[in-house]
Amino acid sequence: MVKKILSTFDREMKNAAFRKKFEKEYKDFLLSEVILTLMENDNKTVRKLSKEVGISPTVLQKLRSGKQDDVKLRNFVNLSRACGFNVVLEKGSDRILL
Image (cartoon, rainbow, N blue to C red):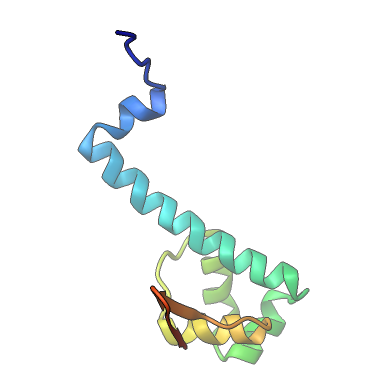
């Protein structure tokens, strides 16, 4: 029987505290990346987009940079729409457009 050699990442992910911290930080990173991608795809500046959505440029910049890791659903939907995207919830064959 050949013993599988785990990567450093795989070994660390077995540690519950490490895994919990990693998962939170990864979600924060994803939010920042999604907002950056939305803005880049539509060539929107922080000031222009924040004005369209009705949030302060400071809040948008904090979300963009990852310094703020939570966003109201309403603001996320409005950000998405201002950049030409829709937010959709899916479960099986059911789809809900937000």
